[in-house]
Amino acid sequence: MIRDHLEEVNSFSLKKIGELDLIDLRQTDEIMNKFSKVPDFPFYQVKLFFEEKTSEKFSNFLQILYRANSSNVYLWSKFCRDCGICLLDSVLDINTQFSFECSDDIFSLTTADMQDKILFDFYEKSERRLLDVELFGTNWSKIRWEF
Image (cartoon, rainbow, N blue to C red):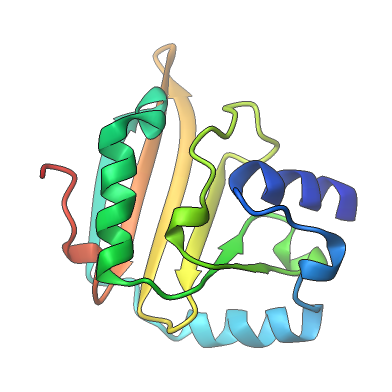
């Protein structure tokens, strides 16, 4: 399972993540409990074609998020409860080249200051590959795709 988890987080991260980079399960659980108390509002969602995540506009969008909150971010995916989370330097450490065929079709980032969260949900509908980007929190929920 740990190998699958590392493969997954490395597909979403520009930073190379090794087993020693994972936060232990006790700390992961503590962090998860802290974040469960953070409200999921305010909230903003944008629906994109999956391929748009590699566009210059999406890169600019991530830059705007970074300027709104440059905090370190925790990367969450389906194996986190069993294998641990990892800490990235910022939202800019997301690999926007990740494959649609990743083992998980949803992952999220939460800022270490517990102010913001971004969720990436990718799926297929009517033979189109889509990506929902959901923004939560004090700063990121105010950012709009239409800039």
